[in-house]
Length: 209
View 1 (tube, rainbow, N blue to C red):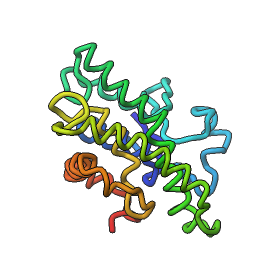
View 2: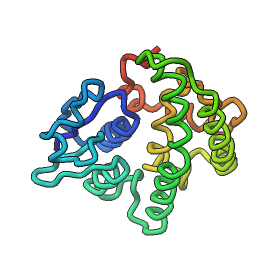
View 3: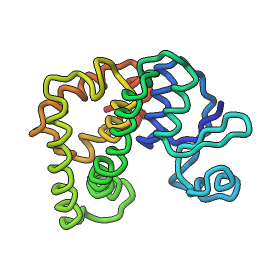
View 4: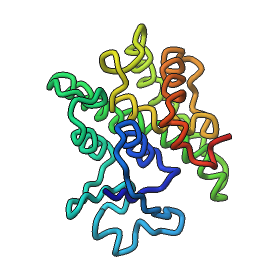
């Protein structure tokens, strides 16, 4: 299987982590987002959205990182990331959908305004955008923090795809100034994710500091 990805992409990282934990080898192809490689015709032929990651398994091309993690986990029956129990899978999928709809949109604003703009020389953070991010983040971080009270993981007693998906954008907590200090349960949970060998091994060199 071949993964088209960028190492600084949180969505790519969640797939890399999933494969590493499951022991699934992946050939990787670097898609340089900063030079527009994702918009070239040869890449759009496998992912018309022009985004990363994309997984190729023979003739099958699959985009959308959460779908890719489920596909990979389905290749290894009986694993705890994606257990066979239908209700557990539904709960994991619920949190992956929650991540897409509520969690990541707020974090992406912090990442763009506080980090990406500086890297690309695009000017200062926009206070109006950061205010919007704060409002969204406060609402949904409270949901997550409350859910994690007296829990080590989001679903059940083991690490699952839900944890990997929701943790991935937090890779930029410090440079993007994501305000976690008021959410001790999230910080405790995220520290557990950061301690995973797969998290440490998938850390882009530029964020390792």
